[in-house]
Image (cartoon, rainbow, N blue to C red; front, top):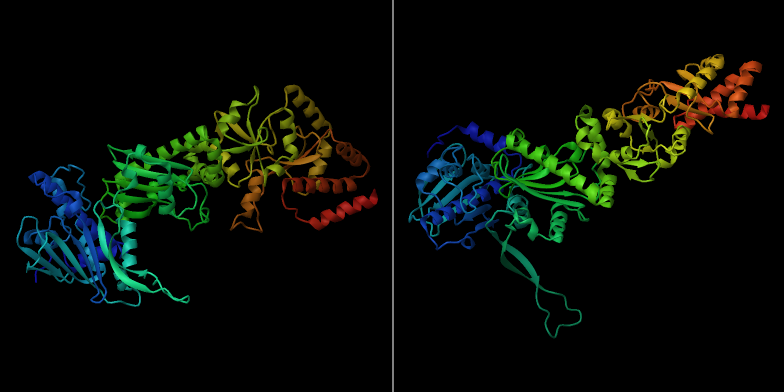
Length: 636
């Protein structure tokens, strides 16, 4: 028994239990090693001028022996001599693939996946004993390497007629937590190959046990029951040719659509396909899709973002979150890069410099494609925005507006004038001369917003208003502050900047004349409002509420409805009650101030409650409001 040269049982235990998260990874590692062995032989025969071999001669074979609980992975690649078995398998973290890669130039599409030399030992996650039998190319003597774990290994001559390597795994005994027999099930093995190794360039074969219906006899009776027979068939489990490595000009739209629906389990074609490749600082192929609808759990905490990450066609990670920013988390797809090693853990991958370079390039590419869809296929973009626009708005609001410049031109809002979704750029391009702000109004729906009293004056002047119906909308605009040097202004703001100097002066006189009345109304509301003022924005409506500070009335509602909001101490905007000086109700208020101030107090509370109802703000005492209305009806 020979001892491992590199480390002790602790190191092997560390690799088995820490580097790989899932036990099923062992199959990916062993298949990748087999692919490397074939690549090495193919390269070597090219160097030697041996024309007797071509790619069609190579394969990887899986055999599941349920009776003896053994799984065999065999290839007809370069094989290993006894010395190579000692160096590559007898030394933990010694990689023959890495040595080959460092000493040979890659030619004719030869790609070596493994680099760190730990992947082989993933076999011990599922096997209690591992046997490797190998006959090197050009050699007449085969050798067997055997080990039951960190205690050590043996290397001795053996009989093997064909070139290549055969790895036999004697599976561990089943436990209450682990069913190792699962790795002998042919359909489980097939699914693992499809998941991790579908694009290995050589066929991965396995003898599949199947059943078929026997032909119906010619003179079969009417009540004949079909009979079945078992048979075996060698099946190629992998597709071998990745779609993303084909020339884009040779791929039909149906192929992209079929691939997307099959790969990501969607029933609808994607709205957009992004097929790109890059070379240089980071070399990769990317095949991305923008879905036509959001998954059922997209806006929940259960949704996991991320792209599939491949290294030379071998799946490293099913959902690599680091490749997508949160605001583009709706993108589905994959990235395949030869700059990333297969045999690295998820934790190490998160800090990989190449990964960050790729992520940065993908972000720019996704934005560019969305902008192109917005310009050239507005109908599709609006469909996209209905599904994922909310995520873009969250992206503007998050991280203190760090991404607002990147995302602002992708946003759409409903327009009071156009009666459809418009961009900020389109809004600004239509602004009449003299308009100071980009006006917006928030509410539950566009129909309810359209009825707000505060919108009347703006509409009369022909100003466009953006209707915000998503809870995050106003927060996003507040973070953006302005667009194209035009500040955003809510219709509930105290000052909309609509009056001329003459109008301001005239209103100033009216306020001075009615100062005592306005102060009386404020006091009558017992701290409900910060001010009572004469409105410059109302036309036909008697009253409205506006906000005197940075917190709007809509933001107040949203913050108080959020989970964790304190019900006893709700957030409150600085409310301002605006009264229309040109409405008949104002003359009634003036008369009551002189004749019946007790009734005026009731009027004040009624008008304030009316303003709250218009804004959709909960009324603190609806019973008192109802009784007050009835009292006035009786008095009338």
